Length: 79
Image 1: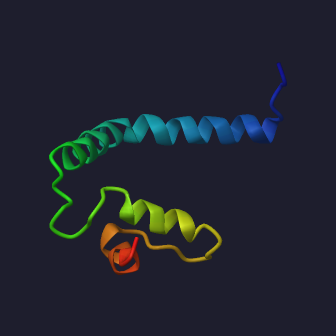
Image 2 (image 1 turned 90 degrees about the horizontal axis):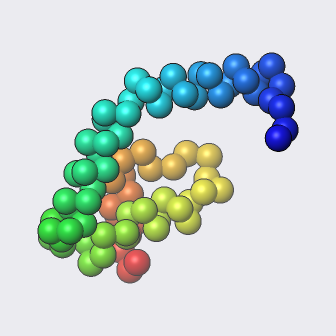
């Protein structure tokens, strides 16, 4: 195994704390996303569930990316 540096260990501890604080919200968000996908609740505005995610993934090189689905929505036209 590769040992972590002191800086890496501190960063890992910080990240794990963020995860601990937000695990309930993460679970709730995941459950909501599955419901939207499974019940096709996206269909009023999108042809596919992953249209917004695809747009954001394609914008990886941008400095400022859409932070919400509403911001990404106009970019999904034609996806």
